[in-house]
Every structure is written in C-alpha cells, then in structure tokens.
Length: 481
Image (cartoon, rainbow, N blue to C red; front, side, top):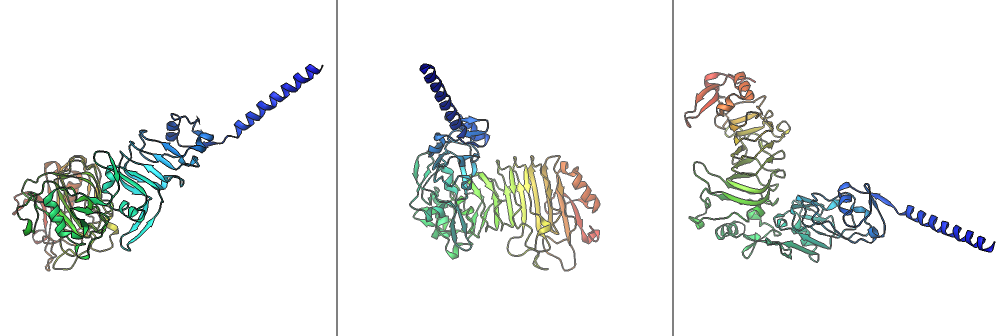
C-alpha cells in the first residue's frame, strides 16, 4: 500500500510540474509585427508564429539588431517590440532618397546606413534658416552614413554642429569610413576659382564648407556658365574652361542662397555634364540648366522659383513644380508685364524619359494677373501627365509644343485678361498670341479645339520662318474667351 501511495504522489507531482510549465509557456507574450520584419527575424533565430513575435528572453536581451542585406526600403514596422534595442544595422539595403529617424524606437541611439543611396535625413533636426534656429529632434550616439550623405546640406551639417562628440562617420567614394566633416571638394580648378571668387566666405582653403554661412553680400550672387564650359561676365577667368561641375550641388541645394543659376545657350552645341543629387533650395529664383544630367533631381522645395529652363536631362522622370512661383509674380504695369528682372518662363525640352510634370495650381496664385512670358514643351516623348495651364491669365508670347506623344493632353488658359506685344502691355491694346506646333501636334485634339475656338491663323513667323498658329488683335480684332 505504501508503494502505491508513493507512486500516486509522484504522478501528481509530475502532473503539477507539467501544468506549471504549460502555464509559464502561455505567459510568454506574443507581439504583432510587420510581415517584412517577421520574415527577416525568422532567419535570425527568433520565434515567429504567423505575424507574431514570441517576446522571449532573446527579444528582451537584444541590444543590437543586424538587418543588413535584407532589401529593406523603409524602416520595418515592429522594431518597438525590442525593449532594449540600442543599435540597428541597416547597411547594404535598398533605401533610396530618404531615411526617417522618427520611425525608429526611442531606445535606438545608433544606426549603420552605409551602402544605401540616402540623401535626406528626416526626423533628426529641424533648421529654421530665416530665424537661424537649430532644433535637434533626435539624440543619437552613433551614425554611420553612406557616401551620398555628402550632398545633404539641410540637416546633417547642423546636427553635427550641435553634436560634435557623436561618433559620426561617413563613407568615402571607395567605401571606407571617415569621421564626418562639412568640407567638400570642388575638383575642377577653374570652377573652384570661380566659386571662391563669388562665394569666398563658404571656403576653407580649397574646400567648400557646407556648414558655413554666406556673407551678406554673397547671398544673391549668380552662377552664370556659358556654353563652352566657361563663365559669363568674368574677365578674370576669360578663356578658362571647366571640365567638371562637381561642387555646384552644394550651393544649388542650399536654402539660404537667394541667387540664380544659368547654364544655357542657343544655337551652339553644349558640352554635356553630370551632377549628383540636386534638390533646389527654397530661395533660388531662377534655374536654367542645359545638357546637364542629374543623378537625382528634385524641385519640390523650390518655393521661390519663377523662371525654369530645363533641357537635355536624359534620366529625369518627374518634375514637381507645384510649390514654385512660376507665373505667380503678377504684372508690373503697362511698360513691362513682369515684375523684376528676367520674366517668368517655363521651358522643358529634350528629356526623353520625363513622364510627369506637376504644375502649380494657377487659380490659387495670390498676385494677379497670373502671368508668364512663354511656355515651351519640346521633345518629351514619354510625357503622359496632363499639363494644366487653364488658370493662366496672361501669356506674354505663346506656346511651343513639339515632339510630344499622341496622347499628350494640355489645358489651355480658359480666360486671358489681355494679349501683349512680346511681353509688353501695349497702351493701344495691341497684342498677339502664338502656338508653335509640329505636324503631329497639329492633330492634337486640345490644340485643334483651342485654335478653332479662337479662329487662330496658320502663318509663317517673320522672324524665325517657322509656321505657327497666330492671333493678332491688330488684324483679327478683339480676343474673346
């Protein structure tokens, strides 16, 4: 009997032990994470059940997480399940253009972003250039940055200025890491001499300091490059030609520069150049680029831009001009239609891969009349977005529409306030409007409807010998919408 009694007690004890273990297992928390992160963690020894991560001791003890070489394009959803996570390795992924630090758990104090194509670093620091205020949004202890970080002039230099004790490294072109600094090379001697002459305050020796400030007298200095690789209006450098434009990006991207950039010419073959990342700064007013191909080109921040000439970029697929002031400066009176200096102009030409142009909402422009001197869209065979000029109220000269695909759609101005004489408002009310098209665009429905409505005539231009549709108030009477 005693043996039976002991056997019974032993069985009860074993059952109790298994029951306790089962309850402990049930008490291990499971946390929902994104499917992308779940897929990655399942290959790294973490326990995944569906889209749930078993938050066991491996999770709670994890301080460093290696997510390198996993084809990530954004910060994956679910990193906050690691309560003690301090460092994440995002190296060798597919991040492009931007990285958002606000997506990281607050516990993370370091990241490795090497070998990604990241130019913009959001959620790290906020800089008010007008007030000259720097507000750090995210405190980090370690930053390993890709080579493309060298182009960033809007956030990293100011974050570095406020956190010089941080372990902040950036890849060089060969992939090796070097301590971050704000000095950038301008490799071409002639270009460097030109920039040092006009932006002396920005240089430290022979290198441009992207963390420095413009001298007051330099803020509105222009960069004017001629067709042969030289400079307009610089006798000191007459006959000297540059072979590279590298270094100009740092000025074009700077929201403190109030100047203008021009590299354009007519009737001459322009030498082709390449530039890296360019996101036009918010104060730039005039931008004319001819036969320059950009690694990355962005106009979404160009809030002061009123004159835009863009020709010969073989890579660009999208131009976002929605925040610009093109046609938004109003009229200056009877002598000159346009306010100040070079009139508003829009020319986009010879961009074989351009698919989309986003224009401002002209109906919401504050200054009236909404006025532009000319609009030229040429040799854009892949352009498929509708270009809407319906809110334009004055066109100083006219439209050039050539080399566009058969599905191209344009919305012409619905109500013109008056016509001008080559951009000047004539006291006697005389004015003209032309539409220059090729044979294909003559058959475009929007063009046919517009010229038919306004009874425009197909004539040969006396100056250019080009055939065009024309309306002339002197011979055809009053323009009526």
